[in-house]
Image 1 (cartoon, rainbow, N blue to C red):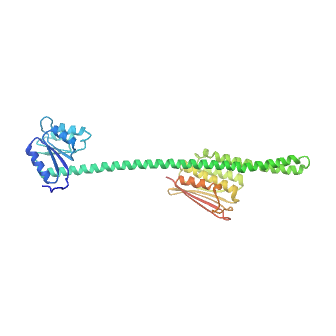
Image 2: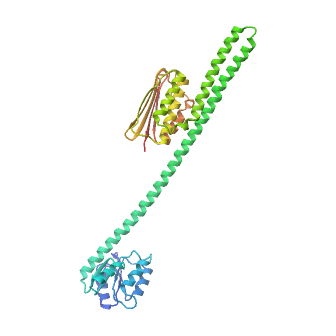
Image 3: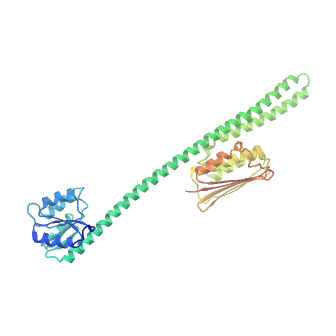
Amino acid sequence: MNAPGAASKGNILIVDDTPDNLRLLSSALTDRGYKVRSVINGAMALMGAQAAPPDLIMLDIKMPDLDGYEVCQRLKENPQTREIPVIFISALDEVFDKVKAFTSGGVDYIHKPFHVEEVLARIENQLTVRRLQVQLQAQNQQLQQTQANLLQALEQERSLKQRVEEMAAIEERNRIAREIHDSLGHSLTALNVQLQAAASLLLSDPTQAQAFLAQAQRLGATAMQEVRQSVRALRADEQVEQPLEETIATLAEEFRQVTGITPTVDIHLMKSVSISISKTIYRIVQEAFTNISKYARATQVQIQLVMTGDRVCLEIKDNGKGFSRDRETTGFGLQGMQERIAALDGDFNLTTAPGSGCQIQIKIPLS
């Protein structure tokens, strides 16, 4: 017999209309540490299984009113008892009877007269299978929940990246608007002063008036150049669907036309990159060219874009005057560059010092 308070190895429901069979099985299972309930007909089995679902059911076939096949079918139709393993135990030994037992939902079939040790072994085997099934179901549910949490986290990350990109784009447009106001406004004001001076001297000093007109012409050309640069920056999104080799070559040619400097461009991409990466690289090269043309006083510019392993690497280098990292650099668009790279989980590194040029190194993961 079990020691008082000993843990049960499992809850077994025995269904048999023969009292001797019930006593024999109940005694053997109880002695081996199982908790046993016994009923003598199918109706009681259905009620008992639904009221307190057992871990396993031992089910006789030949019983009055409801036979074992009918009981098993009803158990499998009920979501509350569907997963309970059923072992048939019967004196019927025809192949037809065994096949019917399995097709009705049984997991094993024991022929009477039975050997207790065989019954115990088969019960333990089915309980082990059932425990593993329950563990697997729990692990699957946990995996599905983990997957759902991961998908939710990825969606939140995607939304955050999109928001960062949108904020960076807004900040970039605001910066362009400030530059148009400050730079173009200054050029137009100076141009207007030159035109007024030329008009006032046109009759009294034509030579000086001509000099003022020439200066006004140069200021007008500068203003037009700045307008074109700003328009190109605002319309950059139209370029993102083109290959990076083409878009960067276009930027390099525009830079040459403005500054007279022909950049050295070295691009080696083994495959195309995503639109978000392409757009980010385009914007950064564009911003770098703008900064170099306005502030760097450089004579040489190098662009290198390569793919190494699972990353795309961009390096922009000039031999201009450089600047101190301690000074305020928001006017150079560096904050926008860093935000764009951060949105793609990339690395941004700036190396510069007064008189030492400037080098920007960027690494962006492809996935």
